[in-house]
Length: 429
Image (cartoon, rainbow, N blue to C red):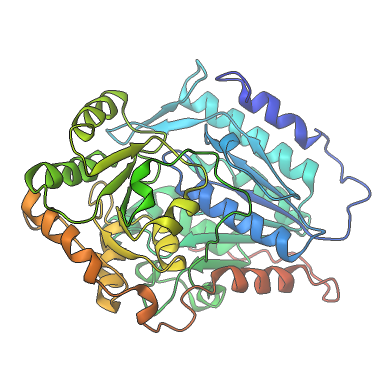
C-alpha cells in the first residue's frame, strides 16, 4: 500500500491520464462507479459487490471504482475491476468534515477530488456511470463528470440503498444539496437496492411521474463466500456455535459493543459465546478499554478486522449487528438468525430498516430508541437467538435478486443494437 496520505497518487496511475477515448476498448462494457465514502465501509462494500458481479457475469467488462476510502486497498477485487483512490475526507462527530490526510482545507480537497473524478471519466470513457447514494456527489463533486458524460452519451445511473433516512430529514437535506433537481436532470435510471414492499426511500420527495418511471427496485444484493480463504486466524471460540458481533467499519459501533460486553459481565450463564469484530475505524482508546474487559470474560473473544467477513458470517450461528445495509444483506444471504441493534443518531436509516425487517419476521430488533439500555435486556435477547427463526423461513419474493436485476438493467443500457442519444432531462422547477 502507498504511504499514508499519498495513496491517491499511486492509485491514480492506473487511469492512464488522457482526455481522448482510448482505442481497443475490448469486448465488454466499461462501467465507472463513484463510491460515496466519507465514513465507514458501507458504500465501498456495496460498490465492490456490484463491480465484482458485473465482471463475473460479463468477463469482457471493465469496472473502475472511484473512492476516497483509506482501506480500499485491503479488499480483493475480481479480474476486470480496479479502483482509483482520490484524497480522503472524514466525517467528524459534530457532523462536519475535514481532510483525512492532506494538509489543505476542505474546499481545496473537494476541488482536487472533483478534477480527478472528471479526469477519470474523460480517460476511461465509460458506457455507464453508477453514482452511489448522492446524486451530486460529496459537496457536488461529481457534477462536472455528470455534465461531461451526459454530453458524450454515457448512461447515468443513481444507485441507492433501501432506506435513506426519515422523510423529515431527507427532504430538507436533498433540497439543500439540490439533489432532487440533479436526479431529474441527469439520471437515466435509479436503482433502489431493496424492495418496494419493504420501503420506498424516495417517496417523500414526490418525484414527477417521468422520474418515478426511471426507478427500478432490484431487491437486496446477495453475498457469497469469497473463493479464496481468509488469512485471518480465527480464535478457538469459532470452533463451536458462536454469535458474531459486528459493527461494520466500527467508527460508530462502540455503544453496541459496550452493551454486549455488559450483558456477559452481568449474566455469565448466556449459553452461546460471542466473537466481537471491531472494524478498522474504531476509536483506539475505546478499543483498548473493550479488549481489557473482553479478556476477563471466558465467553468473549475479539478480532480487529477481517476483509473477508463473509467467511465469519458463514461460520457463525447467529449475528448481532447495527443493521447497516451490507450486514443486513449478508445476514439474509447466509440465512443467519440476526439481532439488529440499530443506530438512531444522526440518522434513523438502520432503525427504519430494522423495524420493517422485524415486521416481516426476517430479524429481531433490540433498540434503546424508546426503552432504556440495560445489560439484562441484551442478555435476554442473546439467549433468545438460538430459538429465533431463520430468514429463509419467511417467503419474500425477489428478496435477494438485486445483483440479477442489476445485470439485467446494465445489459439493457449497453445493448449495442439499440441506438442511443443522450437524454437531457428537464430540471425541476
